[in-house]
Length: 156
Image (cartoon, rainbow, N blue to C red; front, top):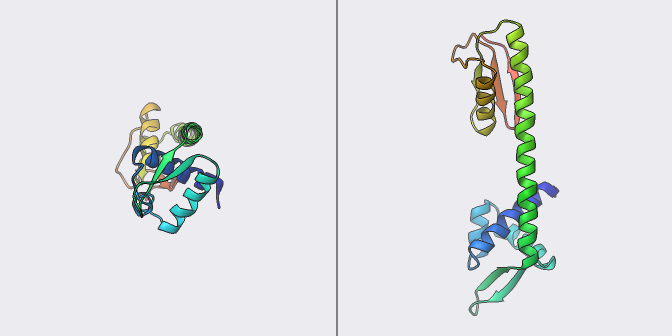
């Protein structure tokens, strides 16, 4: 499995367990959008690493307790997540800034933003910062957002 993917799930599980120690594996699976078996596997890993302890709350009910080591790991994972998000922000911002500077040198007077989400928002903010008007005109070139990437597309 992808290490970043596992770390993201670990962070989500540790955070949810800290705030909802009585959550069932089915509850946690629903919050993560994965199968209960996947949550079970991750929880077993977290227990084996000493980040979570299991306590029997009732005959068939388990309670998950995040340990001090688990709190420290959650803090580390949170810092790593924030670092990754800022890196993504800087990469997108720099790419869009370079595109806008190139368009301005070609005397282009506006650009479309094609797509939605956080990356599209970064495109909008960067255009505003660079004094590049955002247009709905299909004849204008566009910044097309696909996933985490941005590409310049020609106008129609």
